[in-house]
Image (tube, rainbow over all chains, first blue to last red; front, side, top):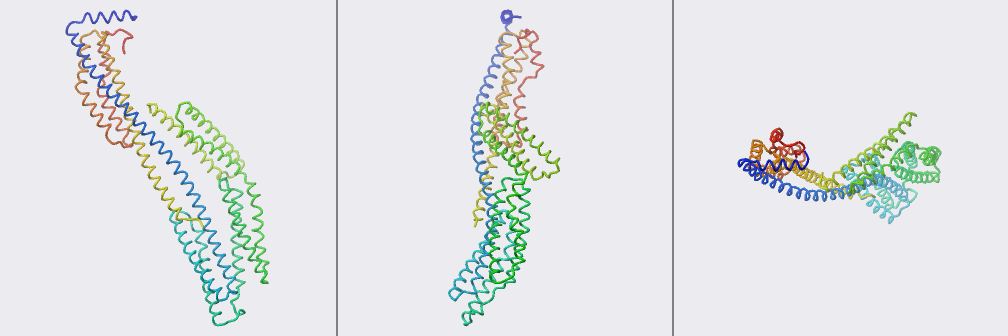
Length: 375
Length: 138
């Protein structure tokens, strides 16, 4: 039936209606128009509400993005701060022990004025000790491991007690008129033993330090290792100086020098160990890729049109392909008998970052859909 | 020496920020649910509008010739005419209630039920116009 025939059919129908049928049609018009008008009104109202709600939703989304960026920055700063705080506190404790040793060294030559000054120094050192304890407590409260810091505290406490006692003895001897030649002598045997113990600790720590340099797979930790290396160098310089003092006092330092040599050798080997670390390059490659993914995530967060969205979707696939290629490379390394566990951890970071990127693209798709009136 | 107390303060700030972030997430989820509800209702109302307008124009334009068929269409429209205000008010009441994202699916089903309640049963609409010419069904 063509259009003309259809019209004829309709006209014929309406012309042939009896009165009852015409009335029925008028009823349908009345009920139908009411229903349609009512539905149209509700739809218009709901569409306006939807647009308004979408606008608020997008505002909240922007706020969330800003807040996420702040939280991310703060979180990174805090994590770095925790590491830095523990490290600096460790150095401070060691420095304080060294300060006490220095004070003990000048004590035998101090006159009464000098003793007074040393008492003031003792007060300052004791204040510092209280502050260090408070700082360790704070670090404990915020979840930083402080066991290694607490291990060094007894030595500092013992040194302070010894220093206090020695100042009192020196003051007493000066007040009762005793001569310089009766001043307390330095216990070289004890000093030698302390140095020996420190050297043994340094050797053990150096072995661990070099192992980390050879096997560590996180490029971000290289700086940390380099800082540790600096600490080792400073410690080495201080110990060498102490040994020199013993030598000047006519003490036998052969055994100490024997123990010092492996530490010196370890210090020289550090750069070589770092260069021979075959996982670092691979991890660096992974983190270069992670940096790209992070840029893509930022783009996904800012994406507001379908064209860019399409490109981002293609990028998701490309990044997953790169990630799979890296997994294949890792399999090859594993087949060669290498322990790839340290690198797997970083590979997982990449994998999770790409998955997050995929989610952000999906959120962008939802957002664009919402802004255009469809979720 | 590093100031651990400031670090602790920063950590407290981070916790406060995270808490605030969690609250905003909840509000975001609630807003999303409200948008989804409205979109679902709009879709359903569009469907309903198509159905009613199809029958309406079929009758008004003379595509339906049978008196019995027109009576059936008149009856269902009258039935809907009597209840549409009530249905729309119930729907509005439901839309205006606070939304928990966890209840989203259950609530969506209820909302659909309100709108679909008014949808005429499919066989009834088809049987209503047995003489409708081929290709003219809306």
